[in-house]
Image 1 (tube, helix red, strand yellow):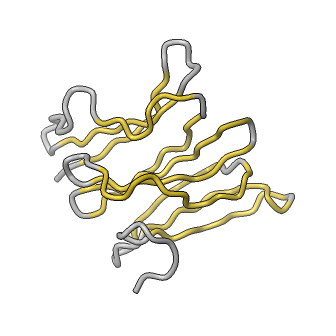
Image 2 (cartoon, rainbow, N blue to C red; image 1 turned 120 degrees about the vertical axis):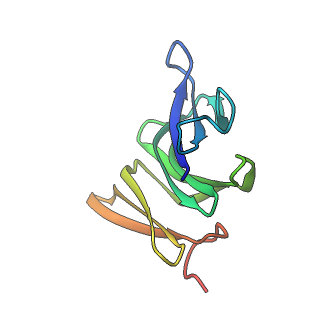
Image 3 (cartoon, rainbow, N blue to C red; image 1 turned 180 degrees about the vertical axis):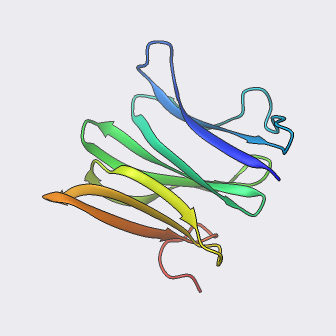
Length: 141
């Protein structure tokens, strides 16, 4: 059994943000080197609410990219078991509002589902989007 862990990375001044990850074997050994893999390099956008689901021996990684206060999108990428990018960064939700409470899960069919809340219609509402194993959105064939 292997476990994935993804997190937000910050510089020492907590000014620039990124997303990093690591894969561990069942004994807790780091499989992607001592520092793991950089998913999103340090930059000015805030990266928050990082989630992931295991897909085969790899992972789909999801996060909220916030270029300015209260304006954000949900982004994703897919990595193989060695940490190589299978699907380059792609948008999951592009309404320019602040999503929060992002959660991810995977169905037995292999389709991942993201749920979150945002205020695009005035009151906080809950939204859901599926992400297929091939990184496409929508119905899975």
